[in-house]
Length: 97
Image (cartoon, rainbow, N blue to C red):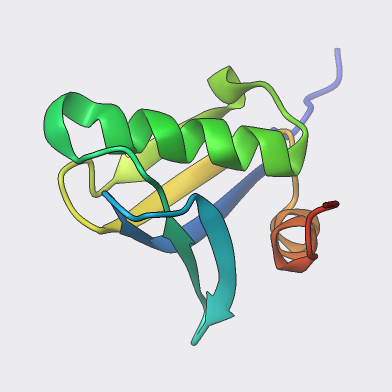
């Protein structure tokens, strides 16, 4: 029986909830800056963040977890099944219009 290592990207994010637009602004000093329109009330901004990341990374939302910062603008997220370099590249690219 072979042991398979689980690949998991971990990214630090700075989230602006309640923004006018929903967008990934890109990386600044190693931190991904993101805006979501949802308010931080009752976890709505976290849900919107996960949906946005899942869409941009083309992964199921269930593969994205907030490891740290549930109630903070600064968050650490994990993306299961994706390497950090691939996640950074996908999130740095301009989405199709």
